[in-house]
Image (cartoon, rainbow, N blue to C red; front, side):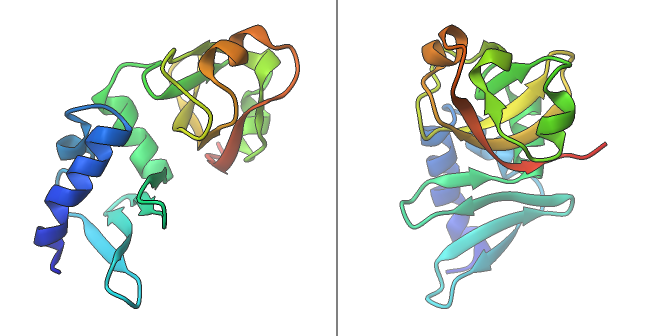
Length: 154
């Protein structure tokens, strides 16, 4: 399969996983597809970095550049968890987000969803996987809200 052939499939997966209409913008411009030995798309890169990796389960995991694009496409908190100053330096270092530090969250987030972690002023801090549903992130005083995969150092 060529990159051109993969694009419609990748767009459909992104529309399903993140929100209808996201796929075309997430994969806009030049994208390079890295493949497994079997020829299956494994990672999608833009000139500025990794957008997503395609897991064995058929779902994407976000890269930092993919997170940046998701924020530009939507309006936070869509696909996002918002934190304040207290946790910002730790999240940037790639440390996990705990529920007591969550200020706002997309109400549609479920455990296992890929999310962007955003500072309350709008800067992307990290990308990762939600460990709690949105309501629990706001209600709980303890517990991991987001397992951070990759943080953005200053």
